[in-house]
Length: 98
Image 1 (tube, one colour):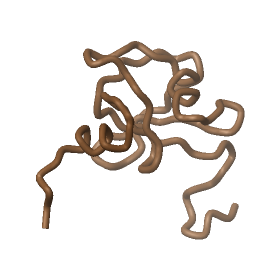
Image 2 (spheres, rainbow, N blue to C red; image 1 turned 90 degrees about the horizontal axis):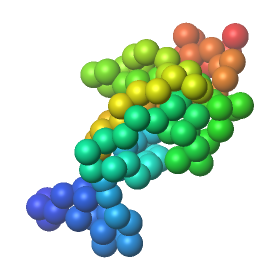
Image 3 (cartoon, rainbow, N blue to C red; image 1 turned 60 degrees about the horizontal axis):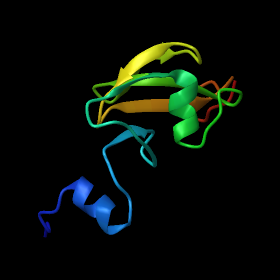
Image 4 (spheres, rainbow, N blue to C red; image 1 turned 180 degrees about the vertical axis):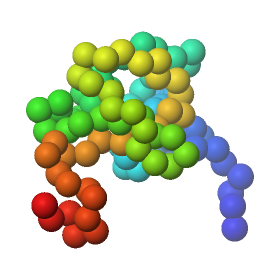
């Protein structure tokens, strides 16, 4: 049974203010309501990750899209999704082994 509350209303109940962008499914960072131009480094920093450990990608239709380098600037709007992966990890095999 749905409560009919929006994600933003639920965030406010938790003491958080929006709007947000998302990295992976479990991290979110605040962004201005009309969007901001951020570097890959800034996006990762806002969600508590570092460019030394993670690579960042746009998400397009649920799949990793283009890589966003540490100094590459992209327009980040509320609701935008990104994927952060550990540097050097091989995700081409199910078990993650190289």
